[in-house]
Length: 195
Image 1: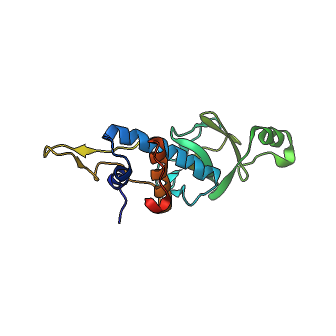
Image 2: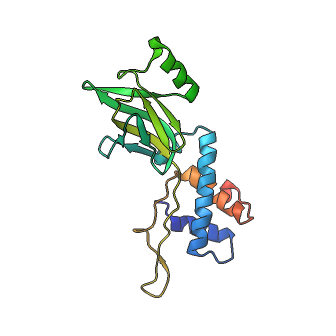
Image 3: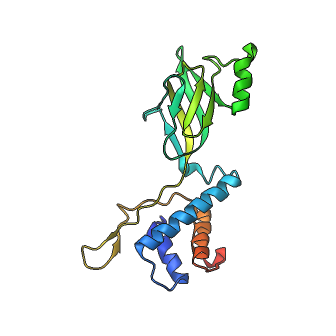
């Protein structure tokens, strides 16, 4: 069975007896999803977070680098990996912190090269060394985005529209926890076995 937003809303309705509008549900879902994302990140549960992986490059527009700098995507949470092509070969970019970058830039034997480039993420940009790096395949976790929970009123009765609504980005164990987080926001406690 595919678990849709409507299924989740119906499960919540089994516990919460008040009116839950589409707008209220959208807000509750997004807040709970951000909490769940943070929990899974703290656990380093990359399997649960796999639906939040985005790749720029490899079939989609790459990250464009100009004079060694690139603007991070607006939904960027944290980097996973980066690659670029030089002399016909694919090279992995190593992400380092500011202190490590300064160290490497000051030591000739560790200086970043086209074969062994480095990158530093800071604020809304990423800085690449050497600055000859141009088009980068950039793999990162994106932050959860607000959902679209669309209700169709054409028949006069509100009907959930699965085609135009957002898809659920979690597997069943995380969906149960997501529902628990939504219920907690409504001051309702439910065990996993009850859901």
